[in-house]
Image (tube, rainbow, N blue to C red):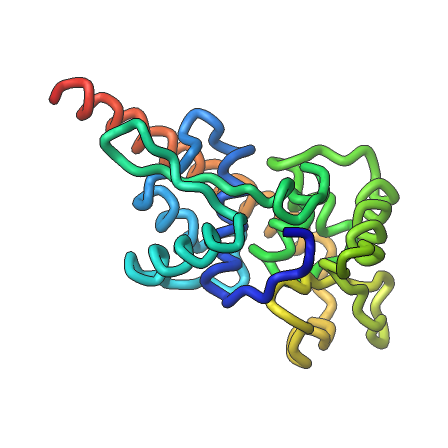
Length: 215
């Protein structure tokens, strides 16, 4: 599949979490359903914060598997899930990282994406991020991102993902400018909280592995 699918908010969150956790907690990947739910319902590095139920996650996984965007792993007592974004959408892994962060956190500037992508892929500079954004926007099989109009007072344009359709008017509206010092502190706190969430996922995976070994 190379055309652009239209995903629900839950399907988009599930897919993005699979991409994120593959890079941030590789020892716990592919993910169990419980680990996937924890990532979907994380309160940090998420916009909006969601409360996805077990049934909703399973339904989303079924649809993503039907679109070849997710794969169910067999061979263990606990089913695990992994994404297939790069192959299904025919994009490089770096572009998948950028797209995942847009899915997880909403519209962002290239500078914000460079910072927020750090745990998934380290970009040398903002121009490198912009290059991948323009490639995703000019994709022959259909654009996966769109550059939003610059709002009054903004120094950079923001970008939005298109896997959930065209961005709503509320997303296109530019947020009020934040104090640079507060924004930097908030970014650091979010990065630390996300790291703690990743470490908790690794710990849960180790506990689950130990429990299976004892059975």
